[in-house]
Structure formats: structure tokens, C-alpha cells
Figure: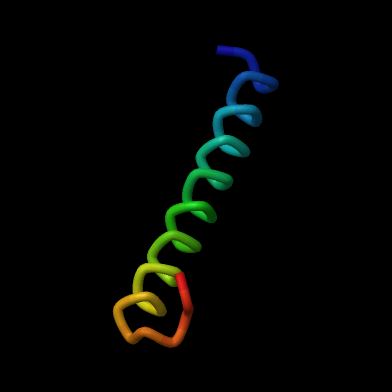
Length: 37
């Protein structure tokens, strides 16, 4: 595997992790009913 492919995979993985964290934060806010959805 080339270094470019590894860097691409790492970036995609980081973005997925960020999205997952955001989803968790939003879910927690919704559970506490602080966020009107």
C-alpha cells in the first residue's frame, strides 16, 4: 500500500470518528431535552 493510500484512509477514519462524536453529543443533548428537535 502506498503512503498516499494510508494517509487517505487515516483522514477518512478521523472524519468518521469526528462524525461519530458529534452524533453522540447530539444524542446526549436530545436525551436531556436541551436541544429542540
